[in-house]
Image (cartoon, rainbow, N blue to C red; front, side):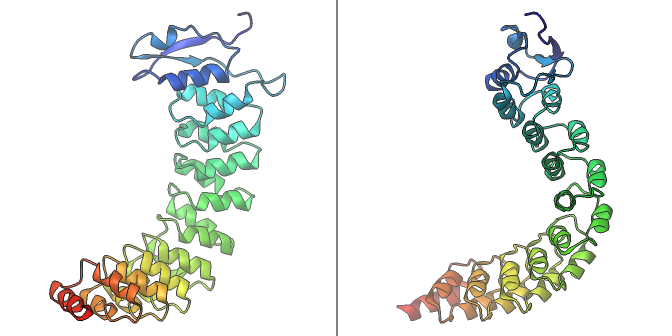
Length: 294
């Protein structure tokens, strides 16, 4: 086919699945693909050479290219080829795909389209170096998404959390946020920030214990939902005035036996039954409770 892009064969471990090869052929129908190229051998696959020509406007196969951009098993060269698409939604689809190499994501982080940069900032495969640059982006939504990426350098994270309440909110939920800053966030005047700290699996147990006495029941609820909450915190939550908080404490794997014995006497029978189902309840106490019920 005259003027068609050419394909070359490149070593690769394993064959591409049929669905992946079909996607490439649908995404680039103006490319000559030999039907036997995909079965050339266990270490071969076909990849496009050179950038695509978008000079004639949106390609008629743009929908196929967008589908291909979300696929997890395409060669890196195909992702790089799709990242140069004229349509921003295709570039954004590539930027949000966790299978895309970090080198392609680094190139896309310079994209002029806001949604593409946001997708790069949220991609779990984006490198710390790329995130460090996006942390200085003038768009707050891009900085906010960057702050939530667990690949970010903690030092960079601390630089951007000084911005606004919304950035503190995101940082407070990031598992790489340093413990001393999670402790500081636990005293934040914004309820949403304290709730994020209470849910964070990296929050120190001492901080969770203090948040178990927070004035807002939603924060105490999040402490009761955190699998790392210590027994001291759960003992407080077992006598919480809020029904949902006591229910969560009755279900928690770390709730001590003394607190569970108290919950067996809860005026709400559902909470009492939930506590009875907790494996931490002493067998003798559980037997007496069941006998009293009968």
